[in-house]
Length: 217
Length: 244
Ligand SMILES: [Zn+2]
Image 1 (cartoon, chains in turn blue, red):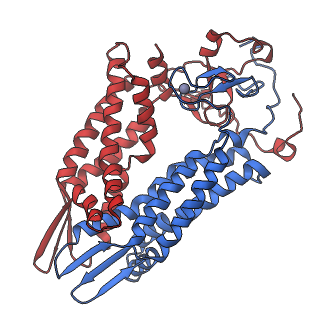
Image 2 (image 1 turned 90 degrees about the horizontal axis):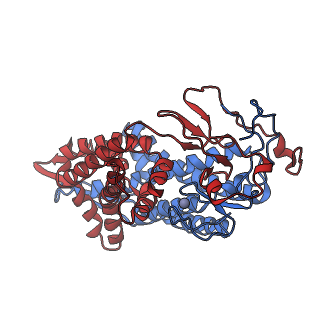
């Protein structure tokens, strides 16, 4: 329908926008009168909070991979398996599909998330090779996909509650499950702390084509 | 401001073009011409909408049912009203409450090996961590993520939408309730638990005989409901109706 003329941001207009309910208020308003959300033209400490959560998430992710996620005891063997070790076992037994699901959810997604959040945060300060709408898409993917990493924690909970067959077989959660859950939670908080408006800030207003209908808005 | 080359290389970056599928989408509204923004009254401000992702300001134009208003710069969906969305969302929320509560009691997986059998419910799964000592925090977290938060969110949605659908004034503190429900959205993980069940089943398939219990199918249904819930919810429309 109407193609953008001179797009202007709330900040350029001296206004402040509510990121929760999209209402616009005069600059300097402290709280949104519609939804009660605290208003900031840009979150003042957004990047610091992103990096703080990012760092604790990374710190928790290391023991999550080094320590056992599951402790299995059956009549014949007792074994402790890490995330990657468990996936390798599955693959060795021919369960390639599930091994892939575990590797993607527990390794590829978390590592990808750390890299993506870092590149988004760095891109705000130093510019980025990625065009802005690509970075916006990257942010949306990170926000959407992060919670799916919880799948491995749920699998551990399910197995530990289900496999309670006395001496025949017994599964209990290893210490890594706690650190893995914390790591997922911290990286979700890190992604939430990011203010995506920062991606667009240095973007100049688009060159305005003449309004097609030639009438003022 | 036009022709400003400050951003150097970024100025040449490809800009998303609003696409031509006019039936489905349109750009949110006309951006304001500069001469009109000098002095905006409170009334003017009420008619504006700012993209929460990129801060671009538009004059809000309500699209028709089934149409979407999309930010011309970053393509975030700003307004997407649907006919009878309120009733449908309430129905979905009720179904979520019933399903989660029922699924909490019933077993989701049953196992058989060496003459011994064991079935496990969601509560058992959460409590599996409680017995593990240091991970007791996880027991609470798991129970919250797959039971309490999804149910609370559904109840909040019903509380907020029911008066709106009935054309009555918003419930007391409805804005705070909707705000909480939106805050909880990423933390409501019942549908992820459903996938976790399937993975767990395959993981122990050669250790023992495993069967899906009734709760598994309830959680599987939840996956679909959550998709509907997110697709039908037009947040702008809800906030707009709470304003009155
Ligand atoms: Zn607001």
